[in-house]
Image 1 (cartoon, rainbow, N blue to C red):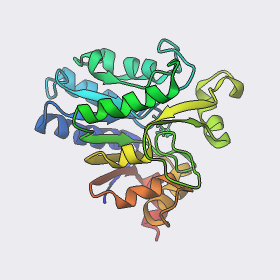
Image 2 (tube, protein in one colour):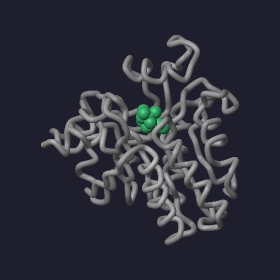
Image 3 (cartoon, helix red, strand yellow):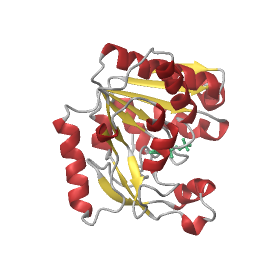
Image 4 (cartoon, rainbow, N blue to C red):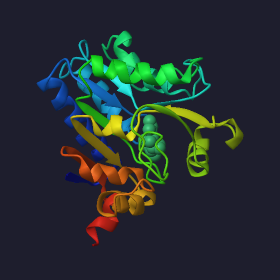
Length: 244
Ligand code: F6R
């Protein structure tokens, strides 16, 4: 595991974008795993900047997102498809046919999950997976539970996640209760993982994830087993680790 400490969120975004850009420069046909949420917003802005400066080219890049709410259509402003289009895809030269996100409206849940896994395998697996960290240690929408899940599946979101994500909706009740997510196994199969974490409120869970016992109660703790994990976190998020 390599931990890179940044002064703040802006620097975290630049460092994270540099790592993704290096992957794209080294392999212009890379398969990237992407995330939504507050953590990667700045990083996506930096990637757009680099694209506009002619430093990176997305024309042969393929992407798979970690997750999508169940029951939201892709035009819904809170769907992760909408997030990805507005925060990244609409501003770069990626072919949208090469961007994969679970279909929240799929009528067959099982097929949706199987097809997602199949597509990832067909394209040779994920080269670099970007992830954020939930306050309860979730990665993707793999919530704390009694076992690690393997592949893409549909989950019931925990109360803490519903509450955390309600900041994007008018009210708590509007947050979809279920979501599709890559499994822990899918995430761990990526050749490299880039975890980005910002803010004091995540210091405790970041410490537990990286240095605590490996347990499905803290899903991100499994990352300790990954051979190629890069953590980019700001001083606030790392303050428990620095103080040990
Ligand atoms: C998003 C995702 C989630 C978030 C996590 C942190 O695609 O899978 O696991 O990464 O909830 O969210 P933020 O970055 O909003 O704090």
